[in-house]
Image (cartoon, rainbow, N blue to C red; front, side, top):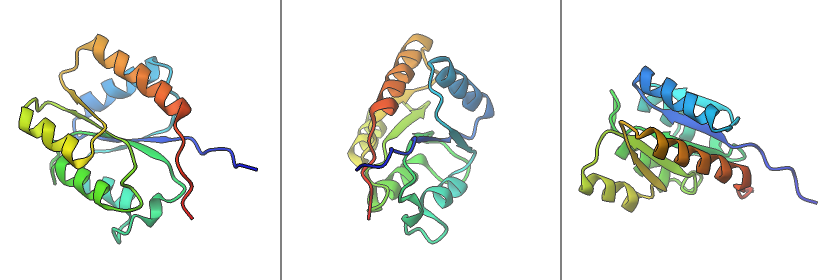
Length: 148
């Protein structure tokens, strides 16, 4: 008998309040109703995702998907991505990078570290809306393995 899967929370790490509102508005417009938990800096996001001790144990049984800006006031999104993907409890957490950086080396570095999708801002509304619709479909079928 399998347990009902927990809904996936969207963890948005974005320091620009205007961008955060726009992203959330488009997520809702695409029909995605998952909880959105916003962070304006990397430190508070890392503490939430990995716990203040950095063990990642807090992530067990708490499925999430991360929307990550690379340019944050206190650390880079690259650092956050690397820490998430290096931790045994969060390495499978899907990460979508949403950033203004369109440098090919930076994009490749994110994919090498384990980013699932890389989207450049300012966003073309249609391509962003399409990506969010796909995200909604993804979230509706996504299964997070239960960790013992």
